[in-house]
Length: 146
Image 1: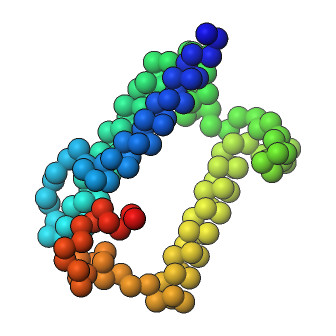
Image 2: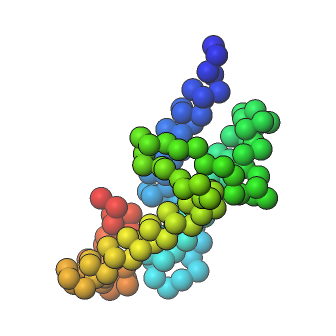
């Protein structure tokens, strides 16, 4: 089978996605550092997902040909960008990946900030669930995702 590595990575991606949902129900860690249950949940969930990400990166490192790992070199971040019109990537003559990455990161940050602002100001979002002052104390933090 010519593409066994690619097929294995796709299968492992589905497994990792399923584990993300599983960690919402039962994280790998059970640290109780904060007074608020929701904060403890998020710390435990994030630690679980970071561990999963590190394991996935390790598997990718083991499966990737050494030539492709050279693309992950942080010392050469400003490489030549090939145009991809299908997704709207049409770099200017002097644009590299560093410039495009900073531009896309800035756009994502601004759009996220705008969405949070609109939700908070115009919809008067009720943040009592996140503050731990929920009128329904029997609801656990995992129910915020359903």
